[in-house]
Image (cartoon, rainbow, N blue to C red; front, side, top):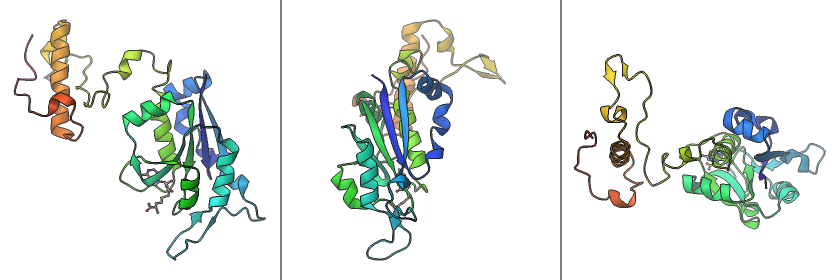
Length: 238
Ligand code: SAH
């Protein structure tokens, strides 16, 4: 069954955007996933096609009306999770991407202006998701980021299935550094162990590097066995 993404937005021309290219774009063409985009404005009821109004309690900006958003959600709702992109949401993780990839698809609500009336978020039991601690001008780029993280995990999208296995965040670790030809570039040599052809030594070096980098940069990720510093030399020769 095709993994189905539905996007609710005031700017439908932003889709598929970058997801029409490369891996995600080829997978879309091949029918490994589908994308339908709904213009929230089509559900406006008045002559001026109004979708927003001023916030109760005062303050700057405009808020998307719950009745209009609800009608747009209703038009696509079919049991798939409904996600509201918002900086107030829980931060998107690789575990979320895996969970969404395992669902039949997702419905993504892109906010604009000051955001969406909270009552429709609750009434539709939306999952509020943020892509990071910064404020974008709309949910569209956030939706594209989320979709990209999910689509690449769908069966058949990435050629070598293994390449998604030991990449960053998969095991609570950042990935080890990568190298390719030339083996000597401007006097900088690739770590010798990677040229050794000794698979166990390569694996051990990569694991140690992944642990070192994770400890240094993202101690908050801490894979289960990372609690105590690893005193062995990461670049140990085979
Ligand atoms: N007034 C809001 C920000 C609104 S930004 C606040 O201070 O919390 C306008 C829209 O952009 C939001 O409704 C949301 O859909 C989207 N957006 C902005 N930053 C985002 C982020 N970090 N993650 C996900 N969506 C974001």
